[in-house]
Image (cartoon, rainbow, N blue to C red; front, side):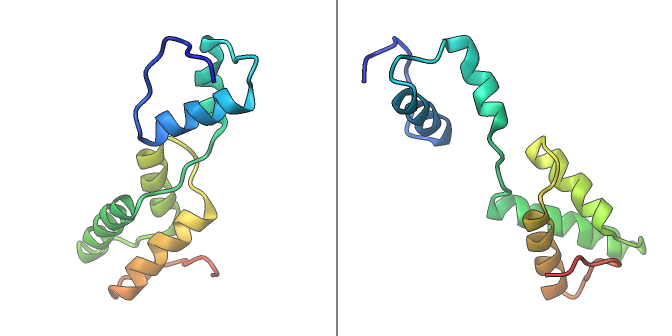
Length: 108
């Protein structure tokens, strides 16, 4: 690979940039990296699943009916993207395991 003068770290973003460079050996114009990265979907981390499930459990404990739409909203806030069915199922499973099933739990 040729050096483009940018520094990437060992983290997720750095690995993605390296992947892009390997896949486009002639080079992707730097201004296009952001657009290409925007096409990648990401899933919630375990920490995000725990945090979201905790927030939904607090809502349920306060007497609110917690729905899939609530889970989707919090996942969307965390990922800055539309919630995937897999992430909703992960959050729903964690809630159910703690005794707080969603009112309209998605099928697994």
